[in-house]
Image (cartoon, rainbow, N blue to C red; front, top):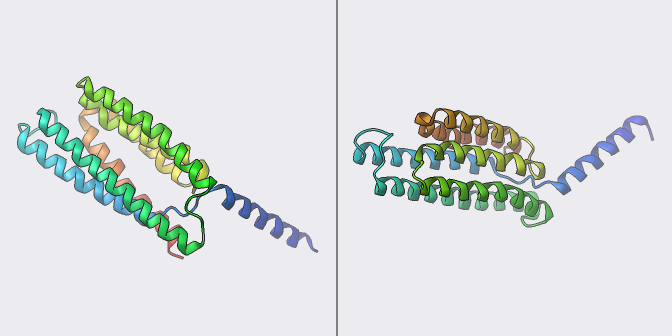
Amino acid sequence: MSEKDYLKDISEIKNLMNKSSRFISLSGLSGILAGVYALIGAAIAYWLVMTYSGGTLYIFHGWVFWTCMLVLSMIALLSAVTGIILTTRKAKNTGEKIWDNSSKRLLFNFLVPLTVGGIYCFIILSQGRYGQTGGLMLIFYGLALVSASKYSIGDIQYLGYIQIILGLIASYYPGYGFWLWMIGFGIMHIVYGTWMHFKYDAK
């Protein structure tokens, strides 16, 4: 056996080991739809605030704010359901198990920082510090993506870094939190989901 054959075998073994330790059936299309949902939710929230809170994003009546939170929660739920459906379909098409050790590790590493961030955001909201929530959502979501990237397609870590940077900017300039949230959860999801779709799905 030649040296090229050895190198080829080693490369194939490495790829098999990588696939066995990572859940690679994440759907790029689900990212695109999540971004679209986020933009729709942001548009509804913007209309509510501008219509019922004195025409400025900086003034929140209680019921308007919590209605916006309800809308965004529904958007998050819809995004999660869409992601599960599309990812399950992709896993079946590629012959990959949807629920194995790699997907369990992926879910655990994603949910831990996301759950902690959700609890912390709720604490901030209960104290009336509404201006910080957009930045915190972006930061903890970005941390969740970076944490989960070790057990999935490594490219999602870069989306995580972008979300963290946007979150830090939003924390420093809370007056722009809404727009940065829209860029992070909406536009970046669409851009990144499109790139992932053509790189991994459209083959």
